[in-house]
Image (tube, rainbow, N blue to C red; front, side):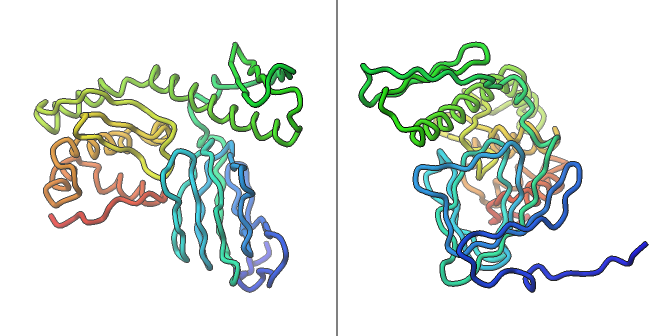
Length: 292
């Protein structure tokens, strides 16, 4: 057996090419690790990136800015920042450093990280209908496994490809949301946690999985007494999902992240372990906490 030899992720990085450089560092059955070197590149206007697998990404050098569809503000990333991009999340790179190279470390996780309901939300056929009566409007409908797209007769192939990609992403997320909420009774789980950790005193009007939250695991509208849980939480272990629910339920009592809020959350016996899991996935946990 040959002795493994170390390599340096920065030393072999190209100096200043005119396009991004992708280098595979390790590839096995379920994991692919690659280095990406950017020099001011960004996702073209009007385009979105969408992957079938989850991706953990970290900026090792330089700076970048990422946007997720449905999120109001882009995320600014500096050296040392990392996050997890769930499968099917539509996102784009708004910018990378155009004065210095930006070096990324990307870990692609295959197989188990796919959305659990993905198998049902399949579009097998796209049927395009061009109409001379249409001038600008485009529409799409889904029946069985076919998506029918109606577009103006004069539309270009490039624009048609962009429209189909957008409709496909929206439709898959809509189907996924419907399937997750049909398969997982979050209201029942929340009621049990409410009884166990809050003496059944909390009033919750609505709780559901949603497919438009990519940079956070959940949110609570304490005025409407409604909780939205990101669809990728359904991929996580049950004890992490329960932590997310307790975290959001606690906001019905304490809307902020004060010591009183964390005192409520920390009653959950897997709280610290779940926080570690979520941090490893790249979620920010609002760390004005742990003043116990």
